[in-house]
Image: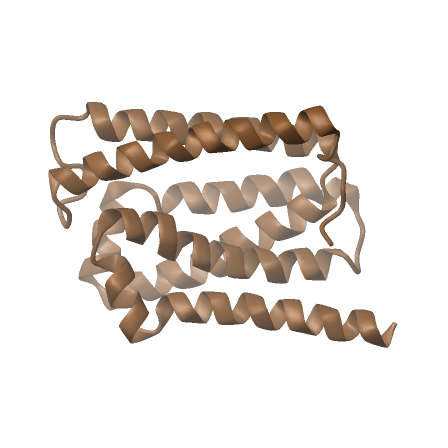
Length: 190
């Protein structure tokens, strides 16, 4: 029991360090300087840090009925901060930027980690498939829109983000199909 507790404390510590690293002045400025690194590096660090903490907490409290609601809540919080108006607002106002950080760690990461750890193979596959489809749609929209969606970034950065999102969608599709064929969706997080 004591070794599991130490392992859980280490996971929670790593999650907190990931989230804090994305917010510290030297790295935060670099990540927010480009649209691709802002959305595909800083956001995942914040959400991933919260998810590590949420998944660790979920391992001690198994309740399968919480998975769908937790995954939905986390997804909605992520989607809110992907709206171009709020991406710009987070860059322009420190209070909104702080709200973004708190929201992505606590309202997105924790529920996503909790829900994923509690979810069964069918729900995990459903979430993965929908996330993959949304990555592809968002990438296509970034490429197809002739005007800048985020006023704080250049149109060329928007196109770079579109290509990166499409690439991620393809990689997620390959990874999801591989896991489904190997029957690994039901494995608990170790």
